Image (cartoon, rainbow, N blue to C red; front, side, top):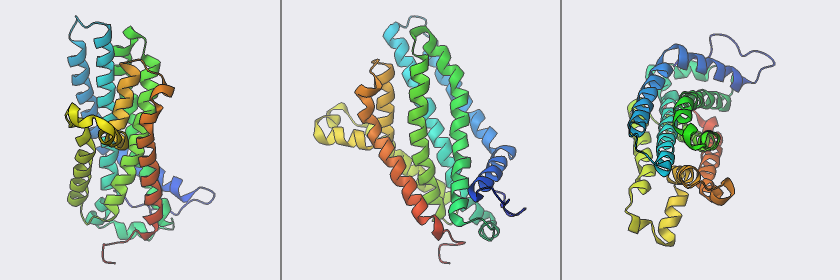
Length: 266
């Protein structure tokens, strides 16, 4: 990723905003962002085609199609944000540009915040791409507004936690391979509760595990509000896990951002 010291930090502008603007340009002008977004659009197109190709769907199954497509859109959108964040610092370290980055006049916390903002633009772009797909499926059952609002809410919470997680891992990883590998392992662990058998999901412990896991809770919230037509107030408790995860990870990230170093040993 390009270093941010090609020009001094402009007076009157917050350093993190200057860093974010340059990181966003680097992400999208280098075509990395567009490549990830194209892959995202292909996956979403295939998913939408598969769920919409059955002309015999009843009303409930149409809601299930909307819920499934939106869950895929949110989950992969958060994954894109994680990929960008996991590369943000370890990529600089691996390419030998981190030293120049750390010599810039911007505080290290501002560098991390700027990179986080840039990574989040992938989620925003992914959500924008998903809008016509969701509209196409949801217009027939009158859940377009509910789907888009809830999808953006859940996706933003998950993306915030994934960006914070990716940056934390990237700060302490010597290479992109290590950073991406650890990020994927943690992501798989977060998805694991969704694959538990129904018997293991019963009882207080199973329910607590489902609500504590941000991905499981967020996707459950989408399913209940779209498929079962529940209101926000009825299902808001499923957002506690994603909300707490986002806050905890971001606070931890800001707390250790000042320790950003050239290498793990110095």
